[in-house]
Length: 73
Image (cartoon, rainbow, N blue to C red; front, side):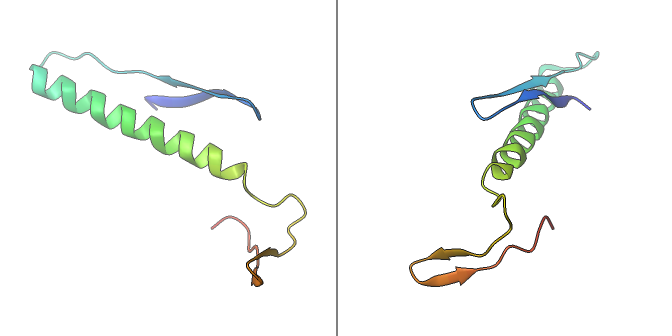
């Protein structure tokens, strides 16, 4: 996998990306870079969303509206 999470805690997330430099033209290399950065962004976002999951799985109340936690989908 070209993008991976090296470490994660409540203070920071460290992502690592690998961009293969294969024989090709600059457009192919730029597309590969863009795809790898997008993959890293998705991994980072997934990790950040985990910070907002309720620890006790109890419903969250916002503006008198109850939101139930159903776990990861």
